[in-house]
Image (cartoon, rainbow over all chains, first blue to last red; front, top):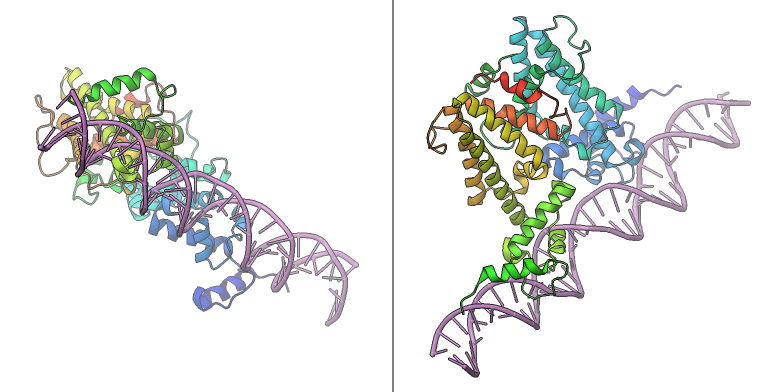
Amino acid sequence: MPRDLNAVKTEVAAEGPSRERARYHHGALREALIAAGEAILSERGVDGFSLREAARQAGVSPGAPAHHFGDARGLMTAIAARAFEGLEAVLREAHEAEPRGPSARIRAQGRAYVRFALAHPAQFDLMWRRPLLDMADPALVAAGQAAFGVLQAAVDGVAGDPCSPTGPGPTPAAIASWSMVHGYARLALDGAFDPETPGLLDGMLDRLDV
Amino acid sequence: MPRDLNAVKTEVAAEGPSRERARYHHGALREALIAAGEAILSERGVDGFSLREAARQAGVSPGAPAHHFGDARGLMTAIAARAFEGLEAVLREAHEAEPRGPSARIRAQGRAYVRFALAHPAQFDLMWRRPLLDMADPALVAAGQAAFGVLQAAVDGVAGDPCSPTGPGPTPAAIASWSMVHGYARLALDGAFDPETPGLLDGMLDRLDV
DNA sequence: TGTACATCAGTGAACGCGCGTTCACTGATGTAC
DNA sequence: TGTACATCAGTGAACGCGCGTTCACTGATGTAC
């Protein structure tokens, strides 16, 4: 009988983590550790992250994560890469759902960018904490570039593929819109103002001239 | 003979920290700890900050800082407050040195904001790490509000006092320019792009329509 | 000018904490034959 | 279908680390008289 990973996962899910009988092999520890890490980030913020605690929440000994991520940085890097993928997805969605031309698309992406940051504050924070991440990790770098690629494509007014290769580095227009929404998100998350103030985000985007 | 603090300080400065004979009372420990803390931030970043290390660099025992700052958060808060004062100063300078009207003043402040962040990356980082700071500290809150007040005043086009009280909360125009330069600074410090790329900052500011 | 004394600003040893990581090990899995 | 075995994915105790903070203490300062 060949190994059937899906069957194992289904079984784990059916039993639930609390009722689950202790099993020497977890079956989906990598995914469980990422989920636990994300939960810790949400509850305690980036500075409260701990590999031991992730292992604890996954119901596994402190040495176990090393088999999947090497060290603490490895797990954080995986979480950050996944967050960049999520950001890219919502940017792309916003891009594709907006038919009213390039300018509207840029604004739609900007709103999506801010929404993502406010919905996942700790992940968003982690994404930019380079000293904590393994910037040599190909998945992380690729995910980050892909996310920015969607932003750049909107600014370039490219109609078709939003991932078409862009020229030699970011353009001032792309940097302008990226900086604006990034700054808005960060300042809001850092408590500088209330991002939900009616008209504030749209009023700001009105002042972006690309 | 009345106490003469300046004489004490001068003497300390003249001897220099290495030649200085061990003296039970430091004389200017508060200032020395702030300076040491800033040096640590510059060398190791916010995550590398340590109260013990600051005490070490000031040549004092680990318990000594408590007399001046209470705890580690107290020292960080003092450093952040001082950084906000520095930011306010450069913004005000930029404002006053630019005679070509409100729009030019906004851009001048924006350039000064970015310049400050790039010149003091770790302090700039700390300024926004609220979980590490005592947000109930009046000096910190006042310094932060004063800095933003200068930005807001430029956007309001106020000719005279750049600290005139502003209305009920930040305006979209102020948030737009603040967010843009803040995002630029943060993304640059986080390695997203090279902030010194010729024309990038000015090109971005050209796309701000306030 | 001298003296007693309260207050201030340090010392330095100690405590407890949670962390990341290591390591010899073992149970489970899957494959070769 | 059965069996031997390599490999994989865990255990859990232990180590060392640097940290923030505490505490009984002491040396220096400045003031009251």
